[in-house]
Image (tube, rainbow, N blue to C red):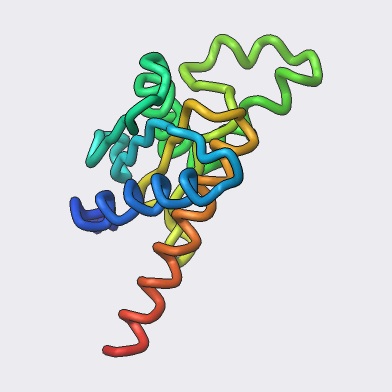
Length: 144
């Protein structure tokens, strides 16, 4: 029998809030959409900030799902395309920067997808949220 770790709803809410905070603290404060999926790629939590582009919500979910399925950043799927490997388009992934896996002890427990800002900032906001989450988890484990 396999045991699978996954993000809880509280974890997902923490990540959503952390993305929103990171995007608002950035110079120019970008309103974004954020989606958090669990390790099975199912949506746990989502938000579209006031002023975020309407299409960004679907993009955020697609990025999160793609990242969780592969356990990689969505740049993993984007880079080969940028180098002319167009066969990557046949895969059911979203090859756009902004999806990042949440890795705990080397295991993908879910992913964060962000859309609405320039792609490099989408990725930066997701990474900032994941960094805050991992720090929080480490401090919880130290207290035990």
